[in-house]
Image (tube, rainbow, N blue to C red; front, side, top):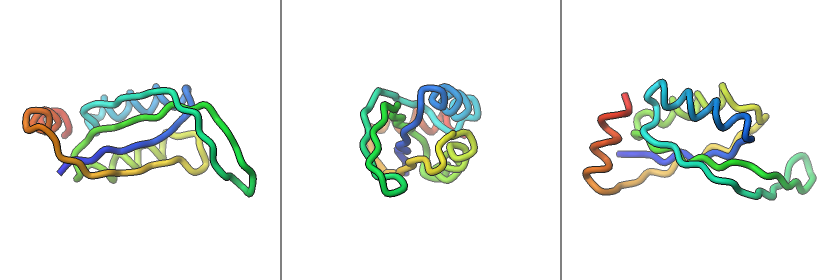
Length: 100
């Protein structure tokens, strides 16, 4: 099985998180894009410009990815969501060949 890990972060966190996950072979691919987030934090409505990361990995490495994000993230409570997925066999084989 495979896992899509989603997190949002600041621009400063993005490079640090992406570089670590790829260098450490915890992720095969990380897509990122700008988002505008609205959320409730400490009883207040907040808005922020963030970067969303879509991190593709093996399911058995998902907890390692989450742990590493928490270590590197500047947020007190980072968003980390894991979604299991299936896909084309060629793409999944590529993920297998990259993630250790």
